[in-house]
Length: 84
Image 1 (cartoon, helix red, strand yellow):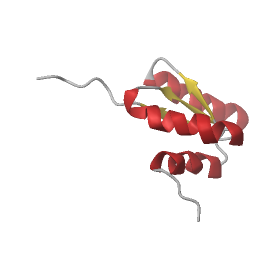
Image 2 (cartoon, helix red, strand yellow):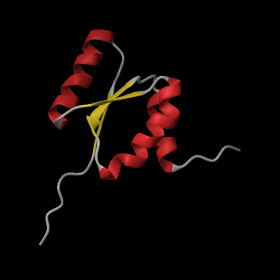
Image 3 (tube, one colour):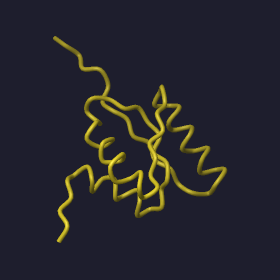
C-alpha cells in the first residue's frame, strides 16, 4: 500500500479528473501543495500557473475550458491575516 501525504492526495484529485492546469496565487500556506505539484504533478502532466489576482485565475480557468473543453482548477493561499 502506497502512503500519500494530504497534499499528495490533493494533487491526485485533479489528475484523476484529467485537469492539466491549476491557476492561482502561491503563498506560505500553500507551499506544501505547490511542492507536491512540483514533485508529483509535473511528471504526470499537472502544471501550476501563477497569477497576480484571484479573479485572473478564475478567468484563466474559465477561458481554458471554453477554448479546449477540458476543465482547469483554481487554487490560492489565504488572504492577509488581520493583526489585533
